[in-house]
Image (cartoon, rainbow, N blue to C red; front, side):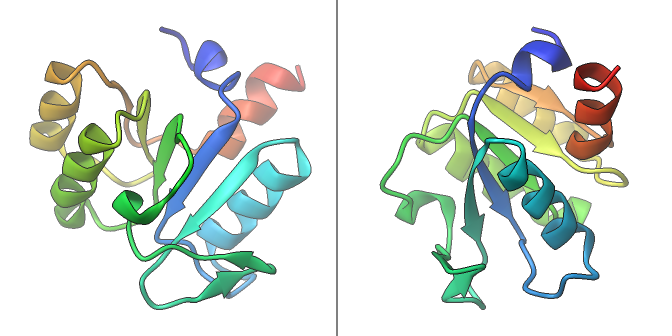
Length: 130
């Protein structure tokens, strides 16, 4: 599966989303929302993000999630991947600077596509905008 085909999925859970507009997770999620994606905010410290219900973890989301976009430190990734496997996400996307080979191998073994150390917004800009 290519990054371009991954970008065709429309429901993206953003794990580690921030309500601070200066934070990359806020900026990227706002960008995705503005470009037609169904952004599902995930952060146990927030009750809502930009007027949407914010979920404490992936298991609490009542919708089918296509992509789990992770904005957490590399060492925090394994339990997120376990939840992504449990909800049968199609893709785990670790943002720039986030690499966890062990968690990636576990996700792949469960049939989930993995992108590491890349920004979904930058990839969108590169592939969809020319």
